[in-house]
Length: 184
Image (cartoon, rainbow, N blue to C red):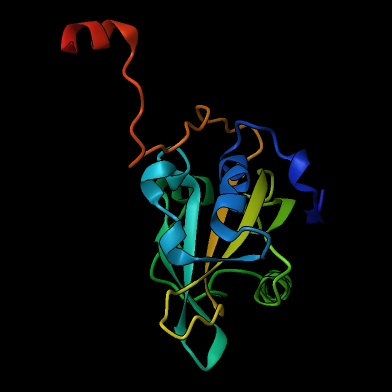
C-alpha cells in the first residue's frame, strides 16, 4: 500500500486521530486553521503519545519547521524520536515534498488532512498508519491566522484509545445522586 488521502469518516472512532478530528470544529469552527490557545492537551491525554508538533522557526520561511514534540507512541513506532530535528531530516525526499504540499494546503485553509500510509522509515515500511494533520496559528494581537504549527497525530491502524470524554472544565457539572445526598 502507498500513501492515500482519506475521508475523516474512514478513521475508526477510537483511533487517536479520531479524537482530534472529533474536536476540530470546537477549535477551528468552519475554517481550516485554529488558534493555538484553543487546544488544551489536558483534554487529550490518550492522544498525546501519538502527537508530533512541528513549529515554524522563521516567520519569513513557512517551510522551516522543527519538531518540538514527538510523543512516546510515535517514538516507539518509528524506532527513533524526531523531537528537536528539522522537518525533512531522516525522511526520503519524495515524502518531504508530499508533506510540504500537505502543509501548503493547510496554510491555504484546506485542512485538516487525513491519510493512510506505510511509515516512510527504512525497515518500518510494514507498519501502516493513520495520520491527521491539523493547522494552528499563534495567538497574535493582529488577529492574523497564519499557520505556524502543525499538530500531526500518527498511530498504527490497530491502535485504539479510550473514548474521549467531553472536557466540561469550567462548567459546573451536577453531582451524582449519591454524592449530592452526602453533601446536602
